[in-house]
Image (cartoon, rainbow, N blue to C red; front, side):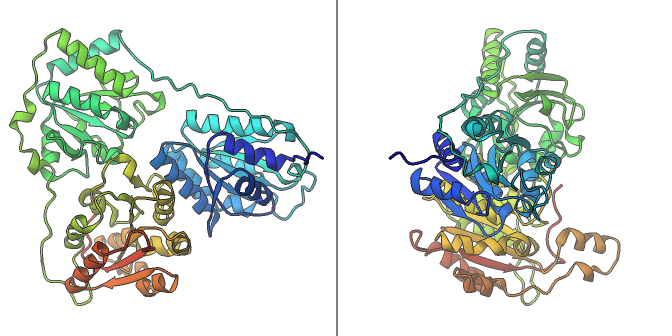
Length: 545
């Protein structure tokens, strides 16, 4: 007798048909049978979370590290409303995931958890797909995966609960995305751009997150032009080890690099939207020619109008520019011969002043942690006033090993994404920097998830006992910052109570012990380690924005 097949079987199998081996989520009435079939019969791994929005964040980090489409699932109503911040973060970060969201039974419009889920998702900017009928389920799943990959954003697939137990026969459907790179081999725009580059005396090549697969071609162009290489924040680490590397471009630059950018006469930008942090609100773009290459038309002139724009693939365009420079026998600029590239990447050292009892110097601690943390780390940062110093002073091996959770300006997202990164790369250590407020808001409820998963996770919790952005605004206006101050619990003890290891650091001696603990960890059987840095709220460097 042939076993019956239901829609929840087809949805689970459709996910497996897309080679999606891992799903993050929280089960409820509308998705539990689908998850069960995915695990027991489709050989899928399910990562259960403590809070629904965490599933979306973990799937986003998984997508970033692996370069695939992440998958998450939640049930209906409040489960989906709990995902709104995470979905918006994914939209702003252009991260492709599919969120399979249950919906209340269509036959029960007065269900306590009924809500207009399409309208809710539309507010975030994410895409919305509806499973239209049981027999279209595999097609609808396939279209959601297709859209996530092509549109580079989260797509929510709505699954009515009353369809799940309807009988259907599964049909495998997978759509190949139309993702051939765009190439601009000729035309006035190309001629104009090459003319600007050829005449430049002090050009800089800037790579953004959309150019991380063009590294070799950008380096070849840099060497041909003798032009320094820089990245946006999201491409951090792309040119590690190259002698032309001047690291991050913009408000996160070193003082020497910032001065160099101001003196340049041409910026050739690949795969970047020229965000205001990158341009310092346009100040760094003055008195120079700007060429912007981006394969997404919406990103061109989104933040800054360039002198020449090419809607094209970064790698192919760099190769094309190099070809025509050679054909025209354009001499190199010689710009890199004038530079001390070591000085360009050196941030000001810690001031080394005496600290008040119970605090460590933040910058000095970062300098020591940079040397002590595992070199093959994946680096994740939460939001908060501590984050820009971390971005500047803690390195990452490459852009896929660096995750920014500041696309929506939220705090409390970093630890969840760190867990997702650890699932994506189980053989590598993950380091996440978070603040006290962010950890209380979103990190504490998932720290135990990392414990359950026995993750090789190092959490650096920067505790200034304040919501820092608000604290500094009160100080700047000579007002009492007391409303922004908090008496938090002992985070190190909480980490230990949750099943991990917690260490509080209030002086240099304890910092040294903490570094010993990092370096002596057994990566195979360690579980998460939380290091609580107690820092003076009146002595945290200002954000570099």
